[in-house]
Image (tube, rainbow, N blue to C red; front, top):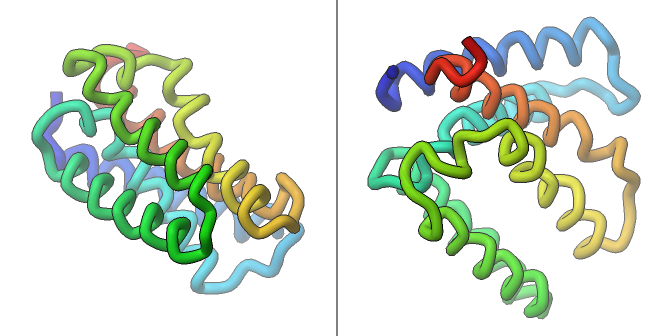
Length: 152
């Protein structure tokens, strides 16, 4: 099983493939350098998320990011979403390492807030606006499970 450096490398490769696919497919929104960087970034986050249930670089990254997102939600008086995010942030502690975070269903479900929260908080947009970022997260997550031998 690779360490965090192996998972970073794997998710960066997956991010490159995802960004190339977005460029080739010419997704409905304008493909800008910032969006390509976003796709690669979400791939990286997905590639590190399965190890958030243990003391890891991924855990440090995710909880730092969650504090920022939760702070933004509170700033915009989105207390219900901030509470849901806080509740969901505790879920990895309920399992053991290589438990539920290393399953195919978690790979599909974990990234759903990438679509739901912006639409709910901003009150505009459609699923297709956020779908590429969800897919990038899921591809990164898949790279982690693949490197851990879950799909061997």
